[in-house]
Length: 265
Image (cartoon, rainbow, N blue to C red; front, side, top):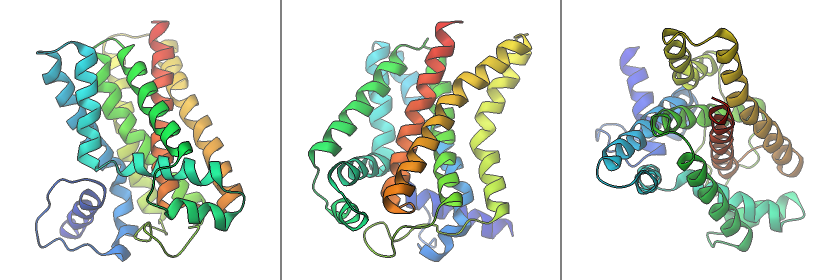
């Protein structure tokens, strides 16, 4: 069983990052349903890389440059997988007037006006939010946001139907068991739990910890509901691109909530 679960984890790593995996791990799209539980754990891994790049970079260059290096490292590590989904989703929903037209636009590999605007605004806002945090919170924010945002994508898969059966986003998990969803929640929320434990150890008042959870979670939940309703309305479900957009939107929402909390603390 452990061998099989390790195989599923490596499959998730292979699918969502450029990290080399052993050659014996053969990609099988049918197994993505079982690998879906590890999507948030892959997010933790990506966030840790971004945090390490920031910490190392900040010892040699100003913090804002270290943040840019960190962002570049996570984009490189994932091959811009989620950013591409955001751009395609913006082009499709921004320029399409029907389900079929939106899906057709999203399959076009060319970057349109809506996609370029969305991508630039999200990346710029992400940089500004991270840059406004105290330096000790930046690594924490990176790890936690990458985990939580991928958990948001898993919840979208669990509560919506797959919107199409062909195209570049075909290899995708389309059925998530209750057990997989439970483990995905454990991996996705683990960094947040560790933060709360650290706050408790530092004798942070309970009401402040509750406020932290509320201010960081509420923007994520709100943006998840908004994007889920939009893709359900226009696409009657999700695609790989819209899941990438979900990850980017909720990652940004977490940074926004953390900045709001830090301003008052």
